[in-house]
Amino acid sequence: MWNGYDVSGSVSATELVFSVPVEPLMDISYAIHAEDFKTLWNDIHKSKDEAMLEEVDNLFQCLAFLQTL
Image 1: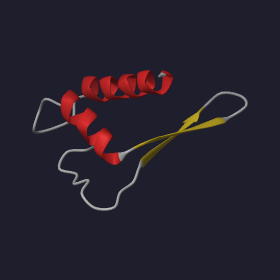
Image 2: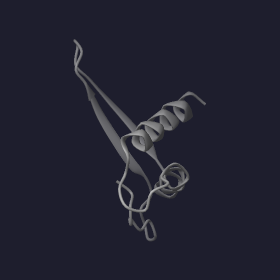
Image 3: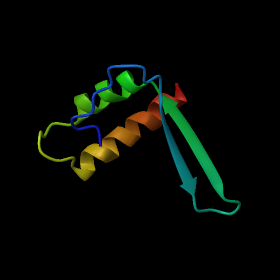
Image 4: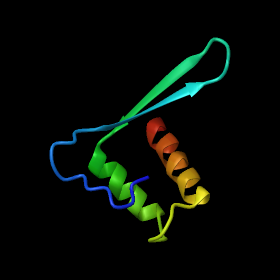
């Protein structure tokens, strides 16, 4: 995921696109500034070795909450 990813430079936003398997098919697009995404991930991710499923779930729960603000 974001382990070791360097956001310095001209990255303006990170866009996540999800396809929801319901009828009618839906695509959901979500954009967040790369530095904000990295900060959020660093706050959630505790291990230096690998990303845990619980951490990834927490990341997406936080993104879903931020979308409601």
